[in-house]
Length: 247
Image (tube, rainbow, N blue to C red; front, side, top):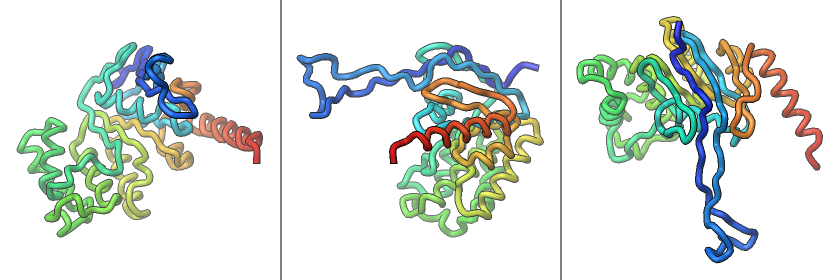
C-alpha cells in the first residue's frame, strides 16, 4: 500500500533580516537578509489510517513541516506527495475572519477546504453542536475567545472528513472536557482509515495516540519510530540539556 503522504529531501528556507547588536545591518556592510533553513533533508512516509506524532523543541521545524504537508508552504528543495485531501488546523485562532459570524466562518472554511455546498450543509449542524458555542455562532468572530476560535477551527477541519488531518497542538484545544471529545474524534477518524499528522509538546498524550513519533531538531528528523522509545530518549535529552544549563 502506498503511503498517503510522502516527503522526500524536503527543504524550506526563510529570508531573515540581518541584525547586529546595534540594530539592522546597513546595506554598505552586507546583505540585509540571510538564509535560514527551517527544514533540510527531511524524508518521511505516513501510512493510511495511522497517526504520526511530531515532537521537538520550539523552532525545531514541526509547524513548518505541518504547513508544508498542508500545502501552505511550497518546498524550496525536494517534494511532498499527497494522495488524497488534506485539512489543516494549525492555529488557535482557527484562521477565522473576525468580521464574519460563526456560521459564516463555517461556510467560508468549508469552501476553502473544497467542500461542496451539499457537504457543507450536511456538516454545519454537526460542527455547531460539537463546538458547543450555541448563540455565539450568531456573533462576529471578533468577540470570540481564543478557546472558542480553536473549537470552531478544529471542528471544521475534523468534520470535513479529509483523507489527512494536519494538527498543531490539538491536544491543548479548549478545556479538559473538550480535549477528551477532540481525542475521541481523532480516534474515530483513525478507525475510519484516515490519517493524522500532529505536533504537540504534550509528550505523554501524543505518545499514547501515535503509531509512530518523529523527533525534530534544527529542521531535521533525528529519530523516528516506536512512540515510547522516541519519547523517552527525547525527554532524557531535554533533562540532560537542562542539567548543563547555567543557573
